Image 1: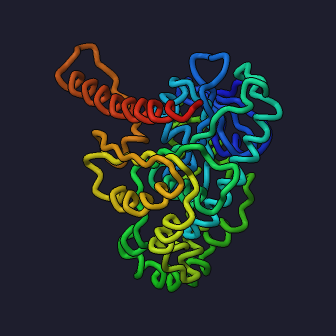
Image 2: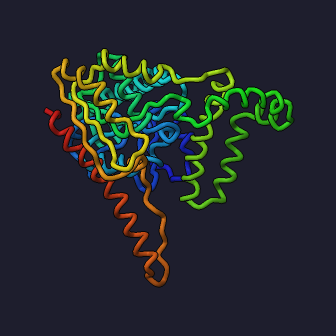
Image 3: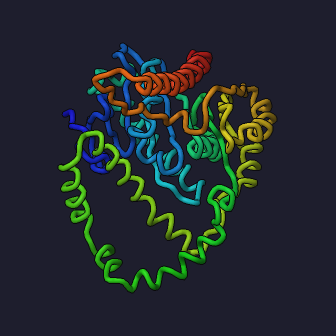
Length: 356
């Protein structure tokens, strides 16, 4: 069954097996993951890609990473996207991603993907690769270090960064005490009591009522906002409990990667206008370990910035007269999408070396 875009994304993740479309792209929800078949339909995918997006936006990858995922599918990959919620405990998040992905992969290998006319026989023995962006890249590295079995044959690490919480979140040191001091006053308000006691069904009814008045493109934004907002309470709860740093710390992560990283082949991707990128530091960390595994570590620099992987098509409506503004808008659209296409092609070409 193909659902309309108006179906809530959060409903799609609620369980079972559902196929739906966002911006004409087909997604199949299996367990807690999203599966995107190669396009156009192929007799057999080249490989399976596990995809992890960045913090917060990684919870709604079908909206935030739609074009990159589509480009990878066009390259012949079966893409399995693993949504996750943000937490300061990165090791816990990595373990959760590992379990979610392999539960989904087990379903695919057992039942195939009937929606894409792919049988289990066509999917068995396919190479497994992984693509991660920003915080998703960090979780990739942790997964490849915490586990030695059922890990990808090759990783593509995009825009890696892992800074201390005080640098990643400005004024973080002041945030915890402020939130803690504010909570008693907030909890005393009638609005807090109402919000806390309101059931999920009530919240859903309110969203559905709002959704019915919106245009399709606005509904996509609301879906994305809903998934984003859903993550905030748990994050703020960690702050009020005195969490002051990521777990493991950036230093502990580097030590872990240096001693325990198990993925033999890794592509590091950085962009020429990314001010928060730490790929160069990661390269120095991984190089001795990958060499000891007899593997491959390569770094490429592409045109773009930190959000190039999650670039969206500008919604520009051309008027009755084609103006210079229309020309500029279409030029920017072509440029931004072209950078994302180049990223997908770079990853595709590099993975091809390890498909046999």
